[in-house]
Image 1 (cartoon, rainbow, N blue to C red):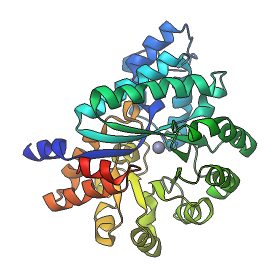
Image 2: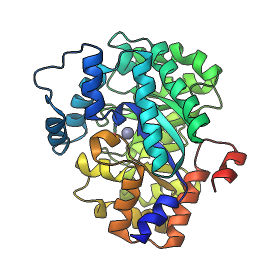
Image 3: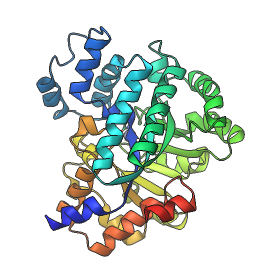
Image 4: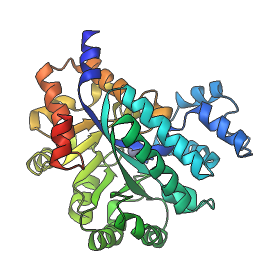
Length: 334
Ligand code: HPA
Ligand code: ZN
C-alpha cells in the first residue's frame, strides 16, 4: 500500500495514450445521444455490455474493429475538447506531470469530420490543461497504417500548418501492425522530417510483430522512440542498440494483456530491459478500453516485479529525460 502511494507521488510522464482510446463507454453513449448517432447492431448496446466486450479482445485487430466504431460518436470540436480534457483531469489525479497524446486524424476525416475540427478541439483542451491543471501536453498525429500511403501523404499535407504553428509536435504510426510494415511509410516520415526537422518521430513497432519491425522503423523511418517495442526482448543486438542510442520504448502493460500480447504482466521483459539499460516508460495506450490509466499500469508492474525504489526512480527519470520537452521543463518535473 505505501508502495502505491510512492508510485502516485513519483513524477510520471505519459508517452503512449491515444485520445480516442480515452473514450469511456459512459461518454461514448452520451455523445451518441447528443449527436444523434446510431451505432451498428453488432456494437454492444450498454455500458455493461461494452465492459464485457473489453474483457474479451482476441488481439489488436479485434480491438481496432470496435475502436473505430466507438470514435464515430465524435463529431464537433466540443466533443474532442471534452474527451481530451476528461483524460487530462484523470491523468493529473494519477500524479501525471506531462503527456504526449496521440490522435488519428484519418479516423475522423474518413467520416467527414475535418482535421480543423479535431485539432482545434484537442488544442483547446491542451491549453486549458496547461493553465488549470499545470501539466504539459504535446499532440502527436498518427498515421493509420491500414490506409493507402497517398492518403497518409494527403493527411500530412493537411497538417503542415499545425506543425508550423506548434499545435502538432510529432508523427506516429498506429493501427493493424503485422500486414503493414514500416518500410511502406518511408516517404511519409521523410516528408515530415524535411518540412519539420524538429518534429518528434515515433512509430508503433514490435507490439505483435517481429523485432525486425523495430529495426526497420529505426533504419527507414528515422524514429527516435518506439511505441510498445516489447518484442525487442527476442534480439539482444537490438536491445544493445536501443540502450546505446537511448531509444525509449513506450511500454503499455495492461494493453498487452488485454490484446493478448502476453498472458500476464509478469511475462513482460521488464527485468531484461533494466538489465540491458533500455530506457522505457509505462503507459496506458487506450485506458478506457484496457482497464486502467497510467497509475494502474505502474501498479500492475510493481505488483508483478517488486522493483526497488532506485529502480522506480530510474524509470521515472528515463521517462522525464525521454519526453519531448526542453531542459527547463525536465528540471521542473524532476
Ligand atoms: N496499436 C496499434 N494501434 C492502436 C493501438 C495500439 O496499441 N491503440 C490504438 N490504436
Ligand atoms: Zn498504441
